[in-house]
Length: 295
Image (cartoon, rainbow, N blue to C red; front, side, top):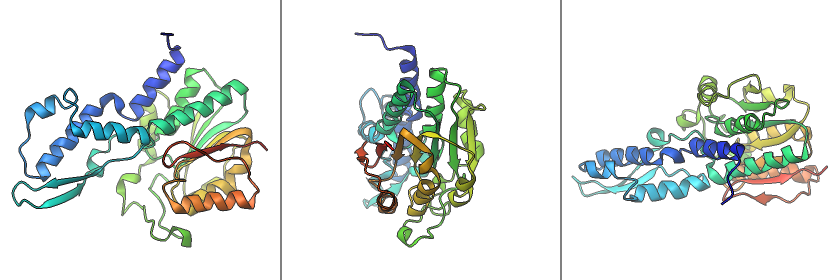
């Protein structure tokens, strides 16, 4: 078997850490313990100790979901005291990974960056909507792995969660902080994550604010990679309107929520039609898509 180059070995380890695949058994233990508490069931010490060794069903679910970036946080159970069938949302307590995009979408970023590096496509790297920062941490890690010092990673986010739906297309999609507090990650938390990976430096720039206010004034001339993860119609359209023309020919555009959220998909389809964008949309997984700009 051919040895893996050190750059690829580091990036593989980085992806496993960002998705928490390295310590998935501890996440499973946390879910198991909380599950037993809310269901009024006894905690089995042997199960906690051997949850990975015995390939507990929680491990199987987490492993399969993590590859696709699907977050499993609704657990059904039977209350041991009442006998009632119930369910509980454990997301706020058990979602500990540094990214929720999953292995396939991280692999897609890796692929795009490989092409950009090999073909010397000019421009910076950017994500709009970074959550805890896992995807942009990987971008910065890639630059570090190959000692690339002439590109900047731009991380744009409100750092206060998603905005309240304002556009008609976003009606019914309220992911704001008071509804989904886990999505409201502060700038300091994201910077701390970069620091934990020893990747916080001048090659990372943070753009704080709602996209309609922050992106029009962004001092970026060229983008080789633009990744959109804003969920909503308005957030997606704001990013495309203000940034798409900065993506150079040969650069990549990645849409995280195209398959999952109809408002995001509508914004993308509308923008592509308005600007006669004919490049084929390629599927990454159940929700992520991308295309390569050729003009």
